Image (cartoon, rainbow, N blue to C red; front, top):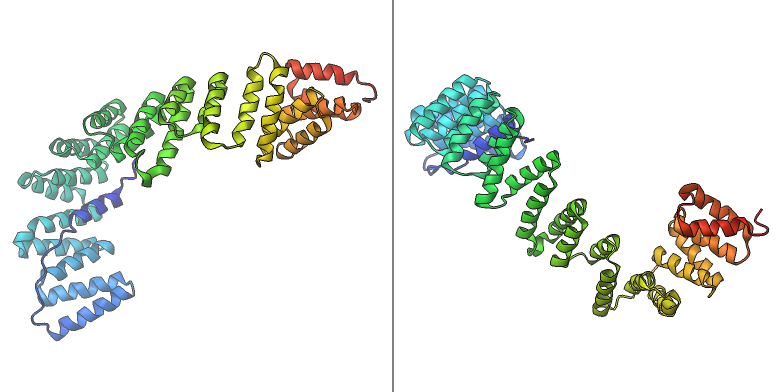
Length: 427
């Protein structure tokens, strides 16, 4: 589940400590202070954190200034010198009363770093008793979490969440419930309630999406993706993300009911190619034809004429009556620059089947096979073209490849096979 870890805990706490602390102006600088400032600068330029820690520590000891102490604390954390961090934190608590909370939090971090969890928890609880804020409850919870005491961590996360319905707190709470305490339904209820009350927060919805995916809950996935989609669909900067989400929604809707996927695309009018494909898959050929004709009238994209030709032919009860129009549309499509192998094969097969121009038809089918050499439909067209030209042996060799894959279940292939196998000179 979450990547929340000891390091994550430290980083979370460290961010709490990043508030600016007023630094005193340097009115009088003694030589030792001046030298150490220069040494700090040099160590920072060369990326030597251990030396920066050393010089800030010396600066604090020389001057007793709070800003040097804070810098030394930061570097002690970076260098994992938690023993020194604890020492400096205690010094800060004693000497800088106004910043007591800050230094107490640093002390808690240092104890966690030293794996002295009981001490860390004791200090964190003291902090909550005096300052019962959501952030301080989280400090206790984080410490219990790092100790792997998930039940107590849950208790304090719940207290923090009760005081402030924070998305990141909820995620931590849900992770414990779902992953460590095996209370999946409770975790799910918390997340779903948040979405109902506050909308589809990024972290919460992503977490829900992962859970629904794990559970195979298609309705849940569709619900969350739809919320995310509605939130960003009109944002030009997130157009690519919206397109990806839309594709996921359509794929899930297809699994549930192809008609729901069609309704979604009809509503949003964003993926015309996919909508056409769904119409075709669902057997809504008349709707697919009208939709494609409408698109062509708007765009004048000649590639669409290939779709129109195929649909007109399939829908017609009198094939010869529409043949001229169909062939004309295919011709316009190919002259318009389309190299769609499906159109090439369909057009070629019609020229062969109706004895209009068998050689041209065969040439078109061969062109289609360059793109898809193992396509059974294209191979069947090729065999039929050879047969029509009297090239019986060639036709037989090709049709054998077809029936080895498909058998004789398809009526058209069966008819072609019967005629080609009896063709004179095929062996």
